[in-house]
Length: 398
Picture 1 (cartoon, rainbow, N blue to C red):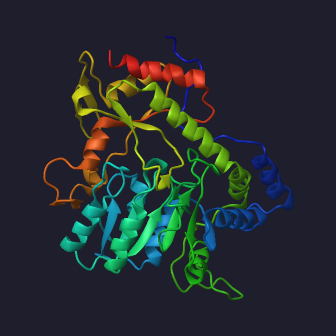
Picture 2: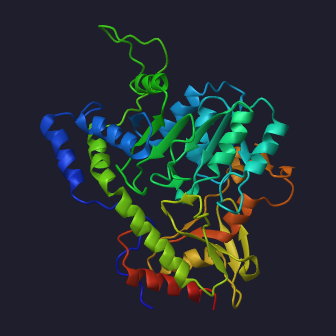
Picture 3: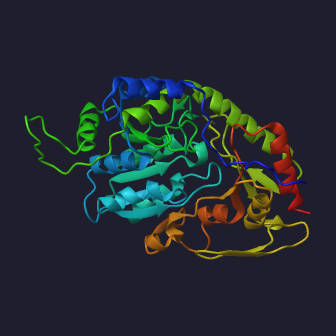
């Protein structure tokens, strides 16, 4: 099999033409800063799509998470329960506000926060008032169970839906299950602005506060008056033009992502692997990234350090690092699964709670990281190219 001449990307932006029209509109009207029709329309369209009352366009999903944590009233030393298997942006804003992240293990049904482990965490750390739950790779967590547990314990929920825009849980859009919710328009997301994010809420006062905080907390005065700390977090009207142009194509992107997922699932039949799971009876992911998990019995020896990895090839067996290195030889981009937060050097002293309590032995998030990988999921990838990628993965088991 020959190496691909053009790089096959994990998930690159897909433009349709409307985006440049709105960018040009911002240019022509000279609204190039953080005010303009593109921002207003992008916020309105997302509210209409998701089913929330208010959307505040911000410079990134991380800035939206930061302001959601600030809205939740986190004080220095407060414990916050966070998904363990996620990108660091889910967790870092807790530390911005002086909070103490406590990580909640995953479960195998969705790879997301385990409700049983969350309940155990409340037993171990009673009085915790904030939970941040992420929807991994576009698949919703068990959101009803998690929100019910939080309601029982009087805790606020922030839903990190950065990866799951357009996904539904029991017919309801993700990004609506928390008191404060976050989506992202980063360059590799299912729709993009090249950057950007939004905070979503049904709370008018919260949305008003975020608009103020995100524009340096300027007071309504004839001069620059500041009575609280603010941030330069508002989305640019130019970036909002890209987002505005992308929103009408979300359903098309999801359909094409799902076709990629199903093609992998069919192509891997007979291999000792499974795809990232979901329950079709209660949820419909947006299939942002297609991922695979290698069966334990088919894993060759693999050792993962902080900055390097090693493996020993074995006939009939493979491991994520071997597959990723093989894909790279053919000019194909894959990615490891997110490394769990409790394994990160900056958080290695923070607790991890499994369904049995404090960590003892390997936890599920570690196991998924050790045996899993993200496959190329770019919607511009042809079926012929994907078939060749499937053959490359199969070759690693020979």
